[in-house]
Length: 413
Image (cartoon, rainbow, N blue to C red; front, side, top):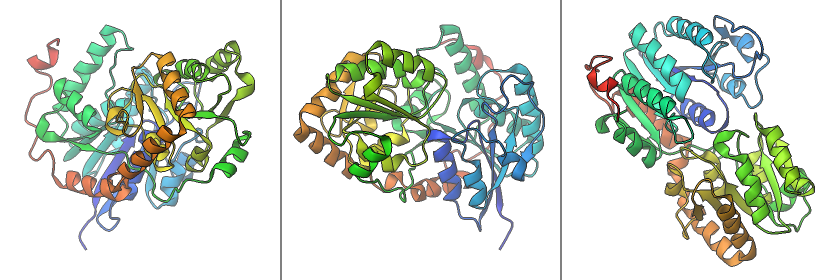
């Protein structure tokens, strides 16, 4: 057997949907053919302290991990693990410079660099190009610019992505809508980007309704509108509360997950008089086992790629209502596999949820069709096959020859 192909998988947060997809993809690779190192950042590991330089490995990389971090799972599966304390999700010039320097050092001897998400995608690909990594791959779980941002920030992020696109050999886009948007914004050439689907763990079989409700402290017969996700701006938690209030006078709500807007979410719940009927359960590792407690899964997001949790909800037989953002309509087909509403219209999201709570026949029909659509495209093995082909040269064959930057990089569109 020849030398294994050395792969560095770099992601800012190895957690939640994107982190789960990155890890499941790495684990799906043939270990006799690929030697994978998973590299992640510190997230909120060192709040209020100066950014730390360097690279942590082994037990040091696993110590004091943030909630939901999957690096220990990667290590337990036999992957090499590294943590860069200065790799943070928010803009931080000093930390970013330290993270970039660490990545350049870490990439020594790497054959394939695979980056995920915005910050790791920027610093990782720039470091990979600086170091001369033979093949650079980037997964777009969504675009880093969106309508909720100021115009100047959207323009700056689009320019950065275009420049980095000249130094990226192959792109993977989670959902066809994300691929199309990347092509439309001239981030990726059509020949260098292909669509993938969010890989979910097929071993995570859903639990049963009674057990799930008991675990969440819910009465057995109340109507429940639930969701799963990080409590942050992207997931529109305040819209979700307003939608819950509009779904019916007796509806209960469950939010699985945590995040920086938890306090604001609690305040909105209290203001709407829902404190006694909402459960904020925080981060949980057993999400598939909890999903059957929901009568309706409601996604209020302002922007998304293609959330893994929608696939998991459909697999669990839970009817879905969601906002029609990015790649979500590829999963939630109106009146076929669920119901869609525009983002930022919580009253419409609430009415859609209320309709499914009241009409269990329609809810059951949509859930049954949705479950049949969750096929083997969403299994890690399918993602592993795509990663293998991509790492070996398809899509994106050939060297990157366009200079960086060039006149097109500076054009405003």
